[in-house]
Image 1 (spheres, rainbow, N blue to C red):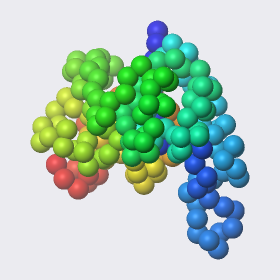
Image 2 (tube, rainbow, N blue to C red):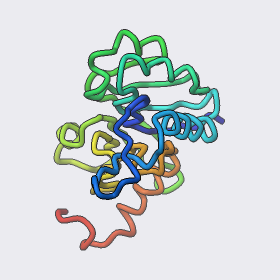
Image 3 (cartoon, rainbow, N blue to C red):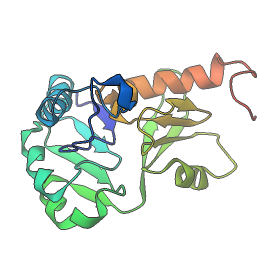
Image 4 (cartoon, one colour):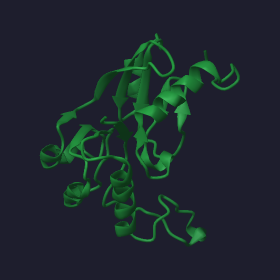
Length: 196
């Protein structure tokens, strides 16, 4: 059975990877070289995501136009992109690698039968603030997946950051997403989130 995976903010080709020199306080990413960063992220995807699985990338897939070719190294053939700020200037170059490209957000309906009988709408948007707009005031049977903020936070009420930085440079499976959703609804107490 094909699995569904999510990630964002791969920033393939990004040279702002940080440094071992702690005096600079720059720790964008813990890699020695851009090549190590690219290989780690792509290898992690290829280890987890099978060729016929579905991989949703919620923006910022490549840092530059010159790095788009790195997508050829991803084995999964069912790639979907929701555009992030680093994708806007290279849509034409990215298009051949993706089944679909959505400019602002996309949604997917999944049966959450492992934890409940609900049909869950998963809203995918690169930007957390826009994802909140699409969620609206009614969080029932909705969950937003987002990126853009790298590893700033992982889980908010009814929102999960799927940035590769937040998940140890690996994609997140739908099963992991549903597990987190179940914890949000049934196990986190009223002291976890600052609002109801």
